[in-house]
Length: 93
Image 1 (cartoon, rainbow, N blue to C red):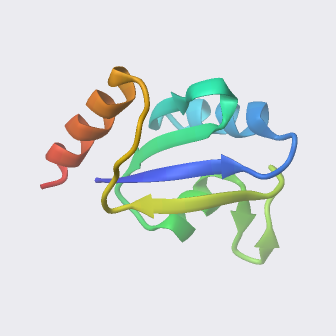
Image 2: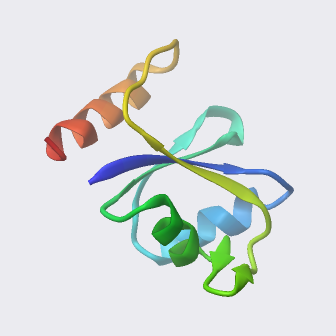
């Protein structure tokens, strides 16, 4: 499994959150409703399509968002976020 950052680029945070929950994906909400960390076994394109951000033929129904796979990380954030990320990264090793 990989970890992806899903970053809403419009006023569509709630719609994306609902889609992630409906699909039963493992996620962590980034502080202050900035986005989501999502554990997913496919590619960024597959995750975008699965959530409805994009579709096979173009834009999906959820509006614009950025979907980025995380290969390494560093910074300053809550301990729970680092623990969530570490545990998911260890699963994929």
